[in-house]
Length: 373
Image (cartoon, rainbow, N blue to C red; front, side, top):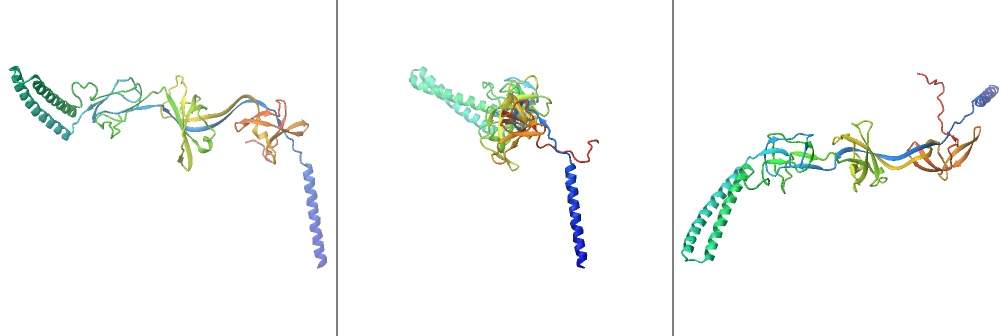
């Protein structure tokens, strides 16, 4: 029994020894790793961050009525170009019954007062003509009569305004014609003929009849994440790309960064605005989605290498590369780096354009894969 156990143990040891020898032999037969090299290139490196948003007019003017009523006619439609003073719409006044009745009562009261003052004026004038009363007394009667006449005229004017929305002698201060206050393009006409509108006053914003804007003065309005807002500052250049306009970029300047962020989907977003510089003939519609590349830094025609070629010292965390000194022989070379776009990085010191840099993290081909479909 003991003899059999000993034999089995010896067989296991011999088998393990044989496997080890075969493994070592196989390793020695593998081809040695051959490292490839790359040389520095001349690149233009742009470090940027991207903000999403839309193109909107810098200023939008809301046209509102100064009197309530019903839309009788709409003279414009979205897309029209209007000048200051052009007709936008006409209103038809539907008088308020209570206001109308009150105005009529004011006319009646004013007429009674006017008739009374007219009688007093006639008596005083007759006495003045006979020399019974002084000129001062007659002047007082005349003034009271003129004031009563003015009150009566004002009551009639108020009645006409309540009834029709306009009155003689008021010009354009109270009428049923709504006109453009500025020149520009009509962006939106949210009302139609027959819609009721409310006047704009201290207690009510009023109904918007049309929205006007100067489409030649557009801005990019978007948001950046809190992780990026610390990298941007006012005055940085923007490159705007509009999804609906292919192969076209628009230059802009960042001129506003919100001092307070807003939480959206669990992340803090900061609003930014950038004024588009003078455009060419390309027409940009208001509200189009756009992306803004905020250029944080730019280096033109500089010596650069792929960022994947850079290694970092495990202790000092300083960057270095390995330079070929002979056939598959390399030495360490410390470098000073500049800006990076995530693919290429600027080399400030440590390399020349003829140096051959070791590709230290090259990907090995998958065994048995021929690369054919």
